[in-house]
Image (cartoon, rainbow, N blue to C red; front, side, top):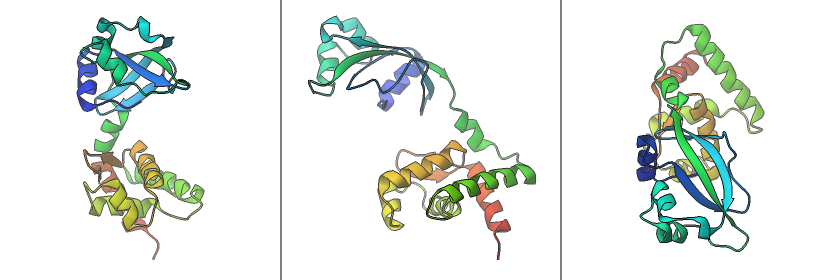
Length: 197
């Protein structure tokens, strides 16, 4: 589920605690954690509803001025069902703390590198993690499609690889593009220092 920045801010403040989506099948389940720029959102209930059951108060709890605006913002399609989703801010995104954690021993760095080597081995296209970290380090705040095109990659797959590094606290998304995190910089320096000749 994607949310506009303004809606995320209102979820974080507690002003917004509902979302409505028209899906063919629910994209989230109760208990799902959604990582966002304001922290981790936890999905409570996911309930199929009729548009007739949605009132202005529900719409306002979802960040809309009223019912008409909420319903007009939903995806069209006879094959789609309207769902009412309850949300709450569950806490900070654990990746935020991880990105800033640079208190790493050589053994810690070796363990992170071993994990990156496993990603490289499973990729089917050879080592890529060091090159990706170096690319993002050299090109902060550059659009993902531009970075992907520069290395001959399809954008969606390029982004999927960046997310794998982000999960490890090595990169972070910006309003446009990415940057390497302090932890990522430390790991990249270690990779470069320990690379075989």
